Length: 99
Image (cartoon, rainbow, N blue to C red; front, side, top):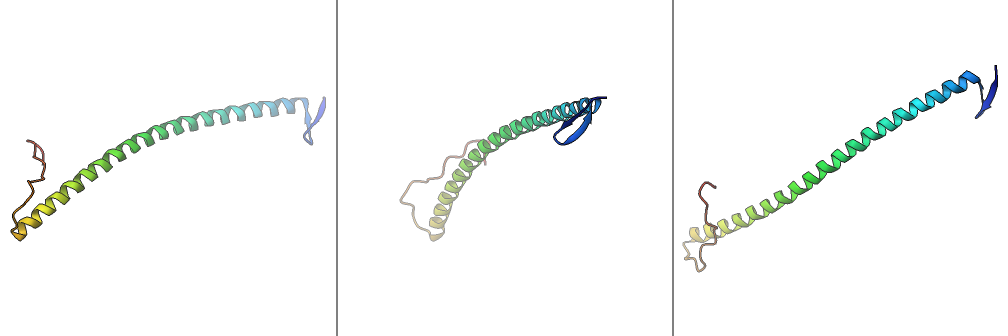
């Protein structure tokens, strides 16, 4: 039987073949895991893009709500003091079927 010394280890001819086979199997497993992780990364990036878009829309909605509440508070405060409004009503007209 032929013996070879590789990286400080003594291998027989069949031992090297087994080692090479194990290395190929490990490499295949690592490549498969890498592909799974790449797909997961792509999925998470897409999800992040959707969340970012939703957060922009939510921020805009919050700003509109805040503005509407400020107008309502000013009008309510003026009404409570019994002051005549010198400005026209700033409240947006309500559309049918909303709020």
